[in-house]
Length: 84
Image (cartoon, rainbow, N blue to C red; front, side, top):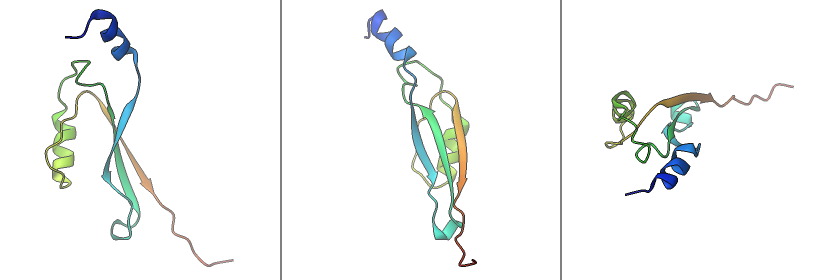
């Protein structure tokens, strides 16, 4: 069990993990989606996020556990052309 001082330190720390839902590749026209999640969600006692968990399962990942809010971002790599 964590003491109160340590728990306050954990709760005040702001950092996140980035989960690559899709990685840009030729097959997906160089589009990628990343999910940003609280890396201290379990320690903070945040609730499970069933929508985020279902999203990554639908994308083909094995069961993952995400807690608290998540942020999704989409990137698209621009195609290079030989035009001058």
